[in-house]
Length: 502
Ligand code: GLN
Image (cartoon, rainbow, N blue to C red; front, side, top):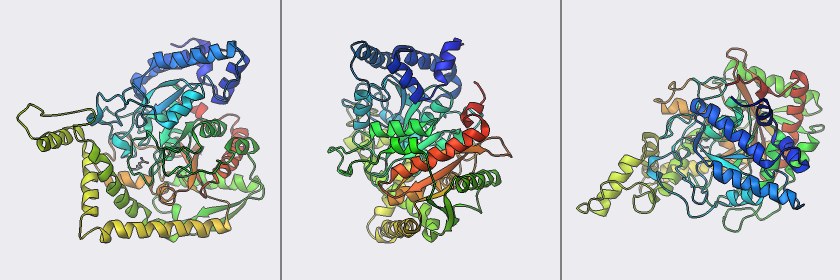
């Protein structure tokens, strides 16, 4: 069991912890140790982590404490520990992407995101579980076993970044990094009652992020409060010359927006295509109540139509497999991790084939095959080419909607957390979890999911999604901050404080 002080430390927001460390009320080492103790206490049940790096985290914490003692200025999140999705390269630390094929691989370099976390004095507690190569919506496609949702351990924590979301929701870490190619930050946030942000495409460097679908991937913050997300976003965001898709313009001031937390005079568009059929009644109910609150807070709410969103899922499942079939070609048993059948008698091709057969799980193989087919000569125009055209139509829908509205809103996911095992053998049912999150990735916009209550029928968290135009990430925080504040006033606490203690 944790001591009362440690229990208290793990329940604080990252902003509060950072302030307490800066004021010398608590050391970065104590804060980091409290979270390592919490991981030791509950992670055998949650399984959020694939690898814990206690020594590395404590070394960073000690460096922060030494800087403070020397009177040096500390960054805004210095000493506050973080959980890192196991898809980001971290020098010398195992990085598996939830796959057997990368077993044993230790990157020789840090991702830019990791470099920035280190420069900010953020101790990295370890690497979090995920669906293999970020393909999935439940974390059940991890080669290392599923992560469990802290609200109900028999349920999924979402995916692909279920480990990062579950680490936050179980108070194992106040901060985490996820990646979002079709919803993998936002959908886990929704089903775990936490906050998740997919920044504008190009807003956070992809250097050192193992590529799933390069035109869609984006790393972002997973937290329990909107302000914590803003603080983390500002640490990891901004231009990086090592990523050719990184946006050179200065990033919007998300921290100021989270502090302002004001929707007065904003026009909020409710996307008609992202409600109704297929959405659980309790999800829709909590979503509509939250929209009413935004209206009370002074926003004008209008309904908008984005007719091509209906085709987003179909187009995504051509574009993503196409890109991933190409990106995953590099895992050939020669360069990284696993090598199978290299007994001296076999050809290189045989070893590659045996390694890929043994190293990849069924979902990854399914998508590599789909993508290879979609890109093959004679089919390229009919599948990949058509999907790219749909992508343009989705972008135009967003352009038209943002000509009338400052932000758009929808439920983040159509249902609350489902049971482990319920959809794992039904790819289409699994894919439908991302029906509301995928359009944003297709257009390169930014979006946030934040908790808006528990569904009456099952008592599980519901997320609301706020979507904004590219490089208008600050608007997410204006809306998210305002809504979070109003809900906290109504409930007297944050939703996450209702999570059953493990
Ligand atoms: N669940 C979606 C998929 O399986 C999204 C994945 C992601 O965002 N990494 O592709």
